[in-house]
Amino acid sequence: LSGVLSTIFCVSGSNCHAASTINTIINPPSHARRNARKKFHSTFLLRGGGAAAVATTTSSTTASSSKTSSKPSLSLPTWSNKIIAGGTSRALAQALLYPIDALRTLAQTRDGRTLSDVGTKALLRGCAQTSSFALFTGAFQFGIFGLVNPKYGPLVASAAGAAGSCLVSVPQEVIKQRLVTGVYGSFREAVSMIWKAEGLAGFYSAWKPTVSRNVPFVVTTFTSRDVLKGKIVKYKERQRLRQRNDPTEGGGAGASSPVVVLTPLENIGIGIASALMAGVLTQPIDVVKTRMMTQAASTAMPYTSALDCASSILRTEGWKKLYSGFGQRSIYMCGLWGITFGLEPLMTSYLDEKKNK
Image (tube, rainbow, N blue to C red):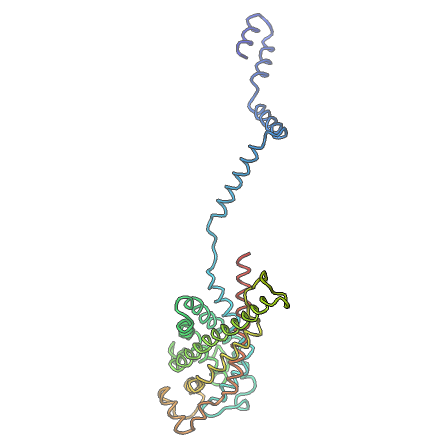
């Protein structure tokens, strides 16, 4: 149309400028067309005709968000929280109770060392460094237990956790007990001298009695914990069921039954009871383990093996010596596992909630 009108104006001798103006009006530039379309769309939406457009926009936004949400997010498995919580709680508990464990070590030495022999500084010598080992010891114990327990049960899971944790706990015990008995003056000196004199094997001296002690101790502790937890949970469930069926206590047919959760105090009590039972069973092995690890602190003839150590104690010192340091160890182990079992569920719950946010 613009071409026809332009031709008419130009042929009839009229001003060609008028033809150009008509062409611009009928055939505007591209930016003018865009502005006109925007104006039309705005008017269309204001007059109610934009429902379809809004729906289209909403659907495209939803599709975009679904694509974004469908992208896989990097997240740790649930049992990894057990590793963090168990390791942290174990390290904190061991650091708090380190002086008591030092007294237990002194009570079990072959020559019966006391604080007057090694000085009061021995109660905290190497505390920070060796307690950091407990972070990994607890991580191994709780991590392996949480991973294995659902499939094989607490007995196998606790045994696997105890055996795995010995990779870290044996070097920790060797260094800690030699520092406490005064064989070395500092953590750095202990690590350097053991490495130079004995190599890697030196950090795993007396590993057999340590494993022989740790596995039954941890198995007894974890299985006792599961049994005690089960009994307490069942008792509390019966109490709640009785209250729910009793209208005088706010119960009735429509009353809800929340999930039973143990309190921190109950978990601490379970840890103390479990550790006490395990301590009674494993105390003789603990004495043998300490004697083997601290032979360097004694001038007596070294034991040739754990069996030689046990038989020598029975022959020359009597069976009661196999329970030396039991009081100190009971306080230490009950406190250690009470704090650990009390803190671990709290930290695991916190990490789970943080992960689900």
